[in-house]
Image 1 (cartoon, rainbow, N blue to C red):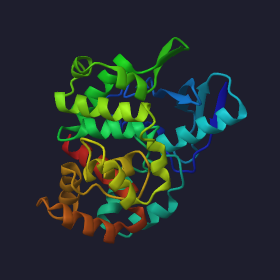
Image 2 (image 1 turned 90 degrees about the vertical axis):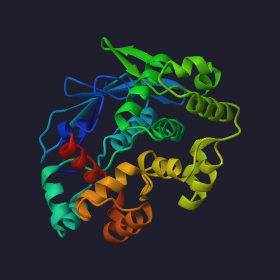
Image 3 (image 1 turned 120 degrees about the horizontal axis):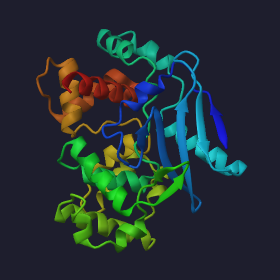
Amino acid sequence: MIIDLNPPPPYNFNLKLKFYLLPSRPTPSIVKDNAWLRAFNIDGKLIPVKVWSEGSVEKPKLKILTVDLSKDEKRKVVKLVSLMLGVGKVRELYSFMDKDEILKKVKNRLYGFGKAGLMASTIFEGIVKAIIQQQISLKVAETITANLVEKFGEKIRFQNENFYDFPSAQTLAEAKIEELRKCGLSWRKAGYIKNFSLKVFEGKFNPENLRKLKPNQIVEKISKIKGAGRWTAELVMVASMGLNVIPADDLGVRKTISYFYFNGELQDAKTIKRFAEEKFGKFLRDILVYLLFAYRSEKG
């Protein structure tokens, strides 16, 4: 079946696809022939989803190709696609960015990028990805993630394409450390991921319950996971939960804001956090993603 999705304008789907560092590999998202592909596990059913654009920036229109779905499944697929591809109103955000010369230039350059999308469809996926990303470059982390998805992720064949979902907690809990290591993980991170996955699989920790908590409570809960701390928690909140926080301890975040607002002089996490929260307010998360994308584009 094909589902129509009409994002609020402006929305540049092709620009959104350029945000993915490893487009041809499953992280589990794949970008191929100007389309976005991945699978979602919805209530135990693996659902393949292919999204492409048939509209323009000012009159956006997305097409979602998938299998036959119930009304409830269709609603959940549309919600997940919208969240992950940053479909949402940006007029107020753009009006705010126009008041700052730096942000105005970034907005004009990335016009139609939309809202900041999610980088994971579940909090479990987000926490595992955050553990992978610790103290390594994002591109290396994405490569390891792709290795993990290809080896352990669920996949479904649809329209002569493979659609991947992130590995389940059970699969990663039952995986051998040596197998996880072959994906590029260090011994320590492989152990952290296996231990965390086991707790989730055994029902001792339900990541989705974090959605009910306040940011400080989320930090407290995630920090109790072996191998995780404040940085991991803040990354999960911003990248996987869509919360308006800043992982100020992240070197990439510090470099980015220092580049645009402190003449490239690297600031400490406390300074970055205070500056960003005061200057960007309720638009913090979206502006952070715009700045990160712009910085990556300029620095290659």
